[in-house]
Amino acid sequence: MLTRLTRSSALTLAIFYVLLGVVSLALFAFPLWYAWQVTIEDGRIELIKEDVQRFSEVFDRRGDEGLADFINQRVSLQIAGERILLMADPRQKPMAGNLSAFPAEIPSAPGVYTLNMTLSGHPTRVVLERAALPGGYTLLVGRDLTHLSPLETRFWEGLAGSITIVIGVGLFGGWLVRRAVLSGIDNVNRGVAAIVHGDLSHRLPVGGRGGEFDMLSITINRLFDQIEQLVHGVRDVSNSIAHDLRTPLAELRSRLEEIVVTRPSGEEVYDEVAAAVEDVDRVIGIFNALLRLAEIDTGTRRAGFVEIDPADLAAKAADFYRPAAELKSISLDFRAETGLGKISGDPLLLSQAVFNLLDNAVKFTPAGGHILVEATQGEIAVADDGPGIPGDEKQHVTERFYRGDSSRGTTPGVGLGLTLVSAITSLHGGRLDLSDNHPGLKARMILGGSAS
Image (cartoon, rainbow, N blue to C red):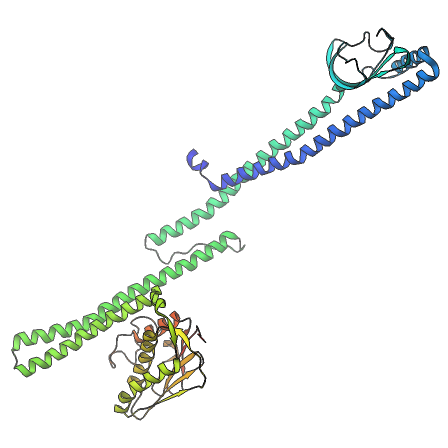
């Protein structure tokens, strides 16, 4: 428990603020103490000099006897111990004042001195001025420094009390902060632990105050949403891979088993082997598409970016698919804006993306239909007048292995074509937009990264 407490970030923060408060108090008190010392000390010395000046004037007017009488009158009127007064003859024998003997601690030269003396049997710290009067007389005027000691003691006691209060309040506040912080951290720990143990639906509670922990909870909940989506996506992809691989592999096994059982003639064997090769090609195509998606997701293909003419790339793709379109009695046209600039990208990937769009267009457009390939500024589009994609499916067709209800089981494919197109456009800083062509579908590859 003690080890956990000493490692607590909240406690460390509280101690830091306590020390900061103590240092602030010290920085606040030091100028006050310094101003007190300077003001009182200078004021005290100024009063002593004024007294010395006044006594010297009395000596000049009334002589030594007159000054002695004046000093004795002052001593009788003042509070005992308030002021130190002494007039001594040339032999330093006291003539007037409240000292019974000339202090031996005082230096012989005139001046202002701060020193320790014994007054009335008690050690005392005093500040006094020794002044020389005409005729060899000596005048001592001083003040006791210890009568202000209680005030200074109260100042330091008040400062010590303030520091104690700051430490107490700081530690108590640190304890409260630690409780609040640990409560928020415990919520996070419980949420993460639930996710670790497989409860992907668990979310952190969010209060209505909009504080820092609420913002953190919202961010972590978004992370949990993404994790749940990715896990479900991986699960769905795994199921789809298993399903889509099982079909060609089952067909391949059936063909080979039939050859082994029936022992057909050589020509029939060749036909079955050719069909088996098609099944193997489908499996290889699935794996190649997945590997290509993995390369795109990691961004490794960006290293092969070069300047590309999008109009030329789209024109070559249209020329490549025109014979396949003519076999289905589909007209395929190409149109490009003049003066298109070049873009930075991977020519092989962009060609693959356009090929996938054209392949889908040729596959779904009925006989007598029309396909248009357009190259405009920062965009390559393929439009057809086929059945199109229903509105509620448009957001799903770019998911891996997703196939719409209308195409499932009726047209060949594994549901990776539009996934590849979307990933390739994202790699090139763009996006894939699917819209209705009335009738049909218009797929627009909106590309970024213009090179010129």
